[in-house]
Length: 192
Image (cartoon, rainbow, N blue to C red; front, side):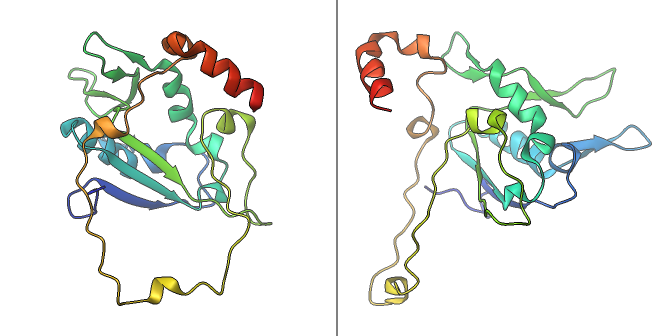
C-alpha cells in the first residue's frame, strides 16, 4: 500500500525479551530531563505530520516479552478514542516530548497501525485477555512447506498501489456508532 522504509511510513521493531515497560518503545527522559524518543514515538510524530497516508509499525515476535507490560500505555490510550467535529479519531496524549514550560504532547494518530508477529512456543508469553480484547488476530495453523510458487520468477513483480488512509480508517469506534446496522450486528453476533 505504498508504506516503505524509504518514505518513513513503515518501521519494523524487534521486541526484546527484557522489555518490562514502555520506555523501549515510547522513550524516556534522561538525567538532563531531555526526552529520548523511542521508535514508536518517532512513528507517532511522522504519522501525525503526514495524516493523509497510513503508517505501519510491525512489532516482530511481540510476545517475547509480556505485551501488557510494554504496550500498557497504548492499550489504555486506545480506550480514549473519539471522533472530533471533523470526524478525525483523537485520543488522549500518549507521549510528551516537550518540557514542563513548553509541553509537546502527541495522541495516537488515526493513521498509525500496529501489527505484531507472534510465535507460540516455550520461549514466549501468551496474550492476556486485555490484549486480546483490543486486537484482531489471524492464526496460521497449517503451513505448506512444499509450496515454492513464490520462487517463480516468470511473474512480474507487483508494484505497490499508493492508497490514502481513508481505505483503512475505522468508520465506527463504538458499537453505538453503528446503530443503523444493528440488525446485521445482531445476526453476526448470534452466528459468532
